[in-house]
Image 1 (cartoon, rainbow, N blue to C red):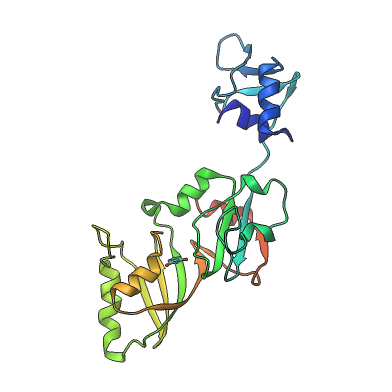
Image 2 (spheres, protein in one colour; image 1 turned 90 degrees about the horizontal axis):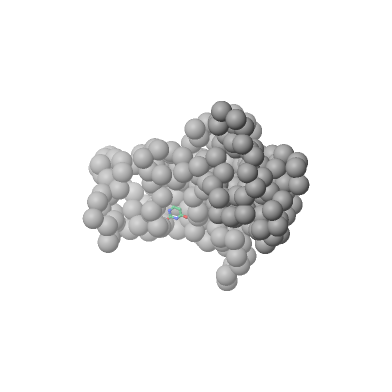
Length: 240
Ligand code: URA
């Protein structure tokens, strides 16, 4: 992590204020790996801080604030982005400090409801969003056209084998389709391509009318529409 970012994440200073401190010579880095412990005044804000470094500001050791992990029930017609554009950002409903430091681990479309995970820990997000990590996302899907009784098994195996999406060169990764009623299914996927669920059903001649994400990994959506809560330690750990 860059030195200016480290200072922002361990104090209430803005980036500009952190840089002013660095340029003013008040920031020191201690590297205990050297045989003689070395303390250097660093004047470069892009200096990379390593795990074994201690950072001093005016001689006082700084400690990083712990990362935040939040689960929110996204309402329809809200945006999975930090700014309002046509619809309000779902961050408007999140009353916490330093909202601008947070991001969404796997966005939902404006008309999709359900579970979003919000954090400031980029490495954790990687475990949720990278297809290679195989993190399962479960969607409850309302369809425009009923699935006939005799077409269900073929559709399930088609989703399991992978769907050819328009404009993509490769099939989607295997997905699990569970048919609940003629027009309602549960779909489990491990990827997050643009409009993926809608495009998967379009590719088999259907259309998504309602889309709701109810589970990510082992964590189930359990708060009311528009509400949020912090994840428990074991929920956070479950994504590692
Ligand atoms: N797939 C979609 O098509 N939309 C979403 O919001 C999420 C997955």
